[in-house]
Length: 123
Image (cartoon, rainbow, N blue to C red; front, side, top):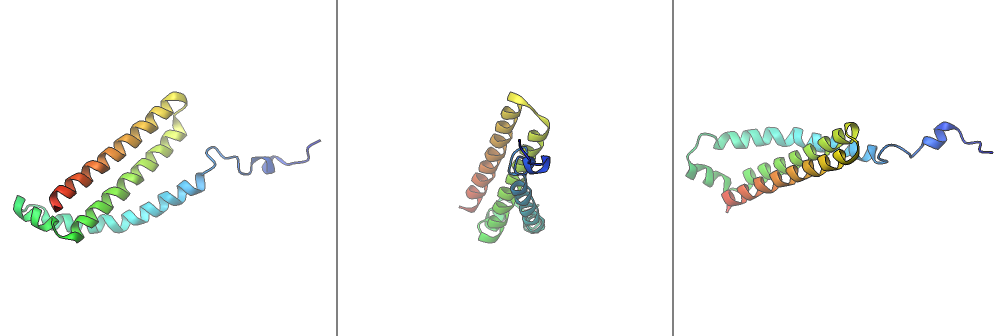
């Protein structure tokens, strides 16, 4: 005879067994974005409306490129994690796996494209 309560049986058996870790990762990236996005807006706004040569000269400096790269990296990772969580909550079966693969592919492809464009501007 088993004298374990229902609560004791359920402890540690959540849907993904990593909910707290994902929650904290999203919170940390949200705080990072709260700092990075205003910095990005101010640095990008300074280059907005300039000629091609002015923009290339501006982004050849390290600070604007670093801010833009960090904003894009953290932003796309935040998007990937949030979209994956939503897909895990609402999709089932093979469609869940395909959607997670698609979101991951889109996020990393967009991140690589932005970093390549910034590298071309900076170098």
